Image (cartoon, helix red, strand yellow):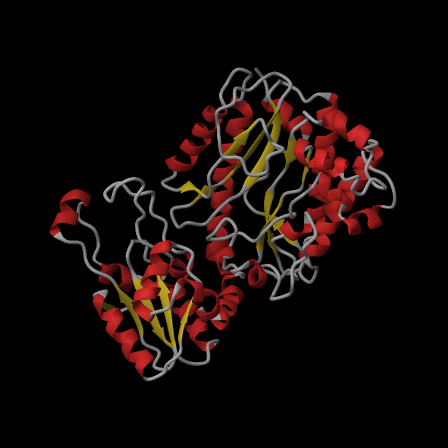
Length: 461
């Protein structure tokens, strides 16, 4: 946990920005894999961690905005639990480290909330995403699952987003550490990959590195020779000479702060000439976008700059044609770059997206429905303290190419005869993490190998 005063200050800021009523926070429970005593790795709800810091299952908390009282609810471990798990700190002992003195059994939560409802007090809660918390809200507040969207507190969501999106020095230090461990993961993968090796061997090694620091993965590993599939999580392919390998993986610290990096490198010792051409375009887009990061610019502008660099580069290679700005306005670049440039990052690898992209990435503004642009998770104006990813890519997705060609879609911009020659190329994505500073930005953690010469120097076998 961080210093006690940090959690006290966070809750004070939260209370100071809410009008009146009660704020209800539900922590996460353990979730069984296949029977009750065999749970998945426990991950606490990130907003619960942010305000209370206690990393154990089956807790809830109330902040009374009007009286200022703060209470955590939970049941202490029984002797049966202790026999299997060993001695653990009590809930009260853990809560005292976060400046909480009032701890009550979970059953008390029901009566307190019923009393509050009976006298018409506002009960604010964040939109739930875990099934067990949806069931709890049904039991606690008699709110049906189809009512969560309208009954959850938009006021609370907006306040939490404004608070959590600005990272403190303590949080930035944690993220720097997560990124450094993530760089270790990627360097190891670049060094060890060989023709004949299974993708699973790479996934296993990067997972080992994340675990050895007493942390975990910040998201399931993407380790694949099929880089044109944006989020593929199977690892059964055998690597072959001439293929590209895409690794999207990050470490999570014991405090649950995330790193998120993507590297693309050849399975062979060197990139082919074709691979170098496309890789350099993606690298240029990455550096071009990163150079624009500063307070006051919108991330939508940064995304469009990366899109322009990608389109201009593809035009120089004969894949596309026409006026670049017109093509991007029509979405022609999305055939090759069908996702957003990046996202906020922190306690969640896609920070706070359980609270809704419309609030987290758009400040309530409507999102585009255009293919590609609709996948831009972050568009709003950047502020000092934002932590975000930059991850442009170029992909040759056979099914997508075939559909667009059959519909003659945007053929005024796309040379399908040239694009079809790269049907088996795969995909390239390059990602690093950045902090927006008072006047510019800085790379988080140490720089990972990204330039072609840097990657090939590690492919020495």
